Amino acid sequence: MQTKQSVINSSTVIAAFGLLSMLLAVSETAHAQGTNDVPPAVFQAAGATAASIQSTVDAFRARLGDPNNLNNPGPLGLKGRREINWDGGNPNVLDTTAPVNPFLVFLNTRGSQFKTPGLGLSQAPPSGGPQGGLAVLFGNPTYGQIFKAFSLSRLFTPVGSNITEASFDIPGTNGTVPATVRGFGAVFTDVDQPDGVGVDATRASTRIQYFDRDGKLIFTSSVPASPGNGSLSFFGIVFDDARIASVVIKTGDVAPGPKDDQHHDIVMMDDFIYGEPQLLPSVR
Image (cartoon, rainbow, N blue to C red; front, side, top):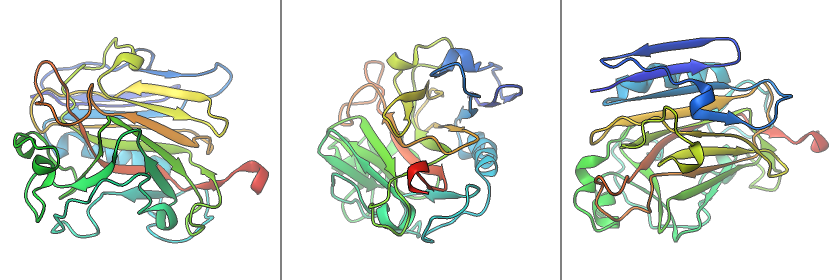
């Protein structure tokens, strides 16, 4: 079993490791674009259980600040955050949702929308429920055993692709007022490879890319791995100002469907946590 946790910014590195110690240096795993800006704080962790990443997720939440603004309309202050755990507010909800594209369930309430180059995006438990979960959605019974939710009970996944694109709007405007956020982080399950140290993020199995309002890439990183079925990983960054307009997430090295083995790394997503959406400067 392996547990890794780190919080990295321009002046401080805080790291705590389990059985195997390994420093995930920001110069090796993440790359900020441009040299004139203060780099963001980087939060990353991976391990076999939810406890392995919980403290890092909590530190990320603290950096974004309170409160969790839930479904409250904006615009609100820079401090604060929004969270999506895909569970319909009830861990007993086990429905598998049909793939939709774009995914607009949280557009008006939490100011985020998602799309994929594939068929669509779905919420599903690993298995069970009325529709059978991921195991039935992708026709692969092994998916019921190899994936694990961080917050019970459903996960989030593209169908027909391994790419998810996120963008932001002011909550309460139904997507009519574009916004930026100061940070974005996500939980992943079953990131098996690569481990992340010395890896070119553009070739990593699982990665996150962050873009500004002009579509310029401002940060990219691989997501830390923890070998073994049902492992959990977290990666997120926080800037001092709201400059993130969109995020592109690559989950695994192939679209879900094939068996997760030494040839394919199949990855699902859980909680999304991001800063309170802010008006673009020209709109203020």
